[in-house]
Length: 219
Image (cartoon, rainbow, N blue to C red; front, side, top):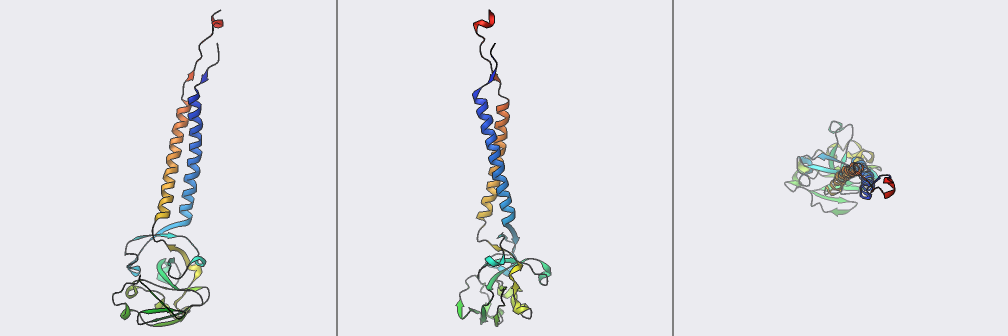
């Protein structure tokens, strides 16, 4: 009598399942690590209206201060302001910049800066004039809702109201596309792992195929 052997389809399902499990684990783990290390979210307050409404959940890309540019909305934290809590504000000036804010109009290094993001209600009346040189390695930040933002203007006695670039924790994203895609990739990886596991179980449970005994078996 010949030895039994598993049907070829069972072996194929087993191999395919193992590949899916490995691929799913790698995909889910990689996307989850990238999501946790590269992104976070923060709840916006009135100081950043109208760009970010009070209560909006804002996606944040975790970056250092060296990657920040003028005009970026950043998340930062300094121990001697806002109770040590992180806040969202817009970067207006970098180290070495000369800022002049007069009658609601901003100039940086002698050039007028258009600020379409600023909430316009009584902006000229609510924004005190200032003339600031930003020290090296620091940033000057303002809220978009100038009449309701406790920003660098109110800390001018402390390094001209600036904060160190090392205080930056991340930059606000215009949309949450990147973190959402990573989240979907995690889900896809999990589904791939589960599907592969089912295939492995199905392959192992495949019944052995018996070959018909030859004439010699009954001789």
